[in-house]
Length: 370
Image 1 (cartoon, one colour):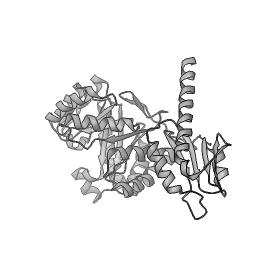
Image 2 (image 1 turned 30 degrees about the horizontal axis):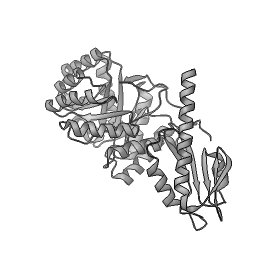
Image 3 (image 1 turned 180 degrees about the vertical axis):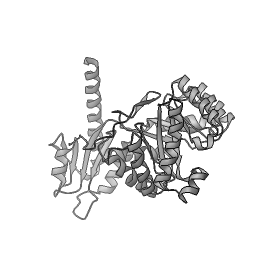
Image 4 (image 1 turned 60 degrees about the vertical axis):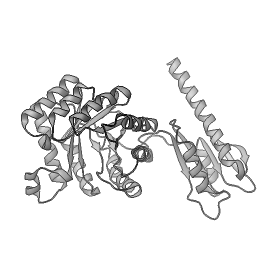
């Protein structure tokens, strides 16, 4: 298959969030945020492990109180994935989690307050070698900017972001990334386009408060898709009123659609019509849920009839084309075997898992030789 993405990425200065590189030529990372009570250490650790299992690169945890900061310290010791702490209002919490091993601080400098407080947070970040995310949000613009612009606009978001960037410039601190989120697609996209031209730091993309699972996914895919296709964006968060695990899945699906990341199975499936020789929708649902654990990149085509079936199946690692009386399975572009409808899913799953094992063995031997 055509694996290279035509996207030309904006050049940005690389930062490091724990073990994950963000910006430069690093893969675009996918993040989510826990929605458990941070003081409930077991629940939060459990959710972080679920996010790790579906391939999250970075997880953010809200730390609203000093008590939550102490809980964060315990959480940090129990998980491996890079953690970002969300800090609002109280700079002392930022200083505490910096000591407790956080990998990145997310602050909204507008609500951290005075210059000397921002300086202390920056000094702590510098001392521990951790980057900061400046998080600007249309819902919490500074009062004077609200007055100046009358309402949130891309220009207002940009001015807010640049104000914070200037703080860091004065303190000679360059290890940061910036987000300018809005719940309106055009406002967010406009603000990121302006910001991309003004700074060299990586950009964290998101459409904030995007909505429920379906509407939020669509809004995020449209907004982030516009930016990512232009090469803007180094790390992404899909904000859904849903299980955070879904945010990670949607994030990878968006990157996969633009060929910016390949992780797990890329399914090519027809929407199904009366030409189908097996139940495509049922087969797809079953395959997707059975193979959610697969992180090895692979193209699998599931096509219901002989019109487009053979063509798509030949291009995939494993393909299925509906046929009468039997369906035809292709492996690596060549017809391999006939399968009947009654053991279709079992047989496909077996073939896919065998192929995954072979690919992993090949990768391991390459690494061993490398």
